[in-house]
Amino acid sequence: MQLLMAVVCDDAQLNPEGKLDVRGVFNDLYAPGFPAKQDHMVLVLVVEWDRDDEGRHQFRVDLEDDAGKPTLSVEGYSDVDRRPANRPPPRTRLVMPLEDVVFPQAGGYTFQVKIKGRTLRGPSLYLVESETAPSVE
Image: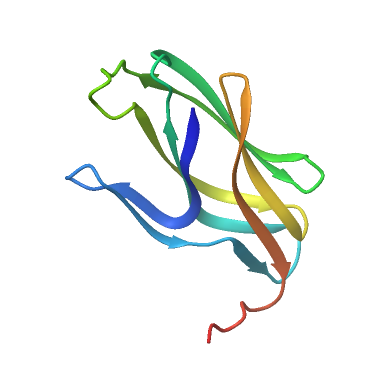
């Protein structure tokens, strides 16, 4: 089992052709003070399962600060079907809108994905105290 994709973005959705459309990927957020609140963001995870991972698998995603303290947790499950060797391995695409996420302080945050007794490092965010984001040149 592995994470094929792990991003935080403005929006993501599966299109009618079954492709994943992701828009506005970011790793840094700017806030005028702390605690800070992000009104909306989307966590996207794509898990590729091993061939013997058939059945229902629970998962937990924790957003942790640099000290490992969770600031947000999301739990769920994925039903994984068996795939013959001549087909791609089973994959789960998780598109999780997150609303009103509070960041207690500036610094680094990382999504930790816990599945099948393993912890996989997901995307990271860095919160900066600033009135405005720097301009892109």
